[in-house]
Length: 499
Image 1 (cartoon, rainbow, N blue to C red):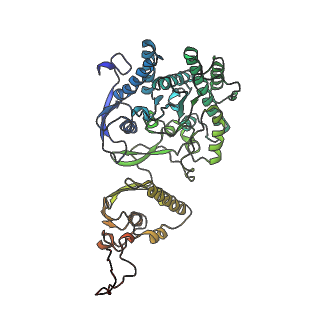
Image 2: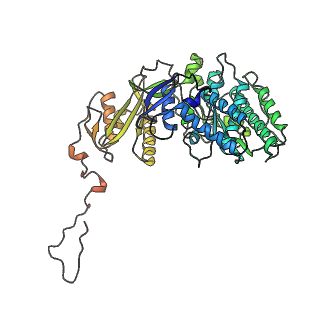
Image 3: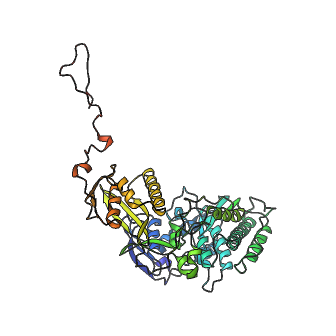
């Protein structure tokens, strides 16, 4: 690693691990900072090009070198500025404060690059938000995007992630006036700092756009000390520029593996999905507290990280959108039904419920259950080989069953309705010694649930019921009304038998 000597990488202790980008992906040999968790290693496996060994410094230096080369070729960067920016980008990554998006890590020249800042990483140990460091990070993000596009793009995509985590750590409920004040202040500071940097570039390279005459008004005060003043100062600085180099700068985006690499748990302004997250350990897949749950006031975790209504999402979007140059992405799913947020637990202790992994007819299936007072309350499926339509139908089916269970529908009714249902994939079951074969994924799942929650096993289907030539499969059935063919074809007519 000679070319990393004299940089921030020098002296960084790395650990080696083997992990895939997801549980079904083949593991890769990886090296990353010793104190980064396994989720970050899985994210690096997804981001680093190729399928062989990879390490964080080498992968990062690849996109740093590309940005510097394009910036120098376009005349944007000189040697001194290039060295300063490279160290700034390394510092953001090592502190897990910021990084370019997955398209940059993978070297996808066709995709529009983005740069994301991880908001909780700017929270200091004493609870203060590093406002100066955040404004500098915004400028570094703009410079990266300007350099990597060779100064040719009039629209850049600088964004932030994990607002929900930051709010929880500040002891602010997502659906509150105080939380919306902080969100608006962060968005205003992001825009002001980004446009100030765009103004500095315009002074050097020429303006493409005039400074806006009408500005959105930042909050007059926020619960985060100094945020309102910093946002106002950043916007005033941008307004004093001779013009802007860019039409648009600030845009939020759905999360990719970059957010996981940085440790961000939500994208943009999305609310927290809950107080726990699912991780894979040597003991299996378990639920552990989120980073926000670990750093938030423990007595307040259920309130801070509980379910959020659509009205709260809309209200948050309304205060943030005026400071963005593009509309924030729509939520990917409706809010989950209310349920208690469990208290943080040690990483290797299993919470109520379990995740079972089997193979049905050669197709990998995971069934996740959640319990309350020993009773089944939720189920969810994960299917690795199936198409998007099939997975969506199974997700909707699991949500419907979970809703019924939550409202008191007996599990036995579901078992009666869905055990022995027949559709592919079907066949031998690997990974479940109690159920050697199944006529469908639902057949296996509900007979498994009967064993676990109703205290008894149902009879096994016969081998011919799950065989490839089973008459239960509509596509392989014989005609419903078979016709007897005549022994001798009638004269003057020609018949053709189609198998």
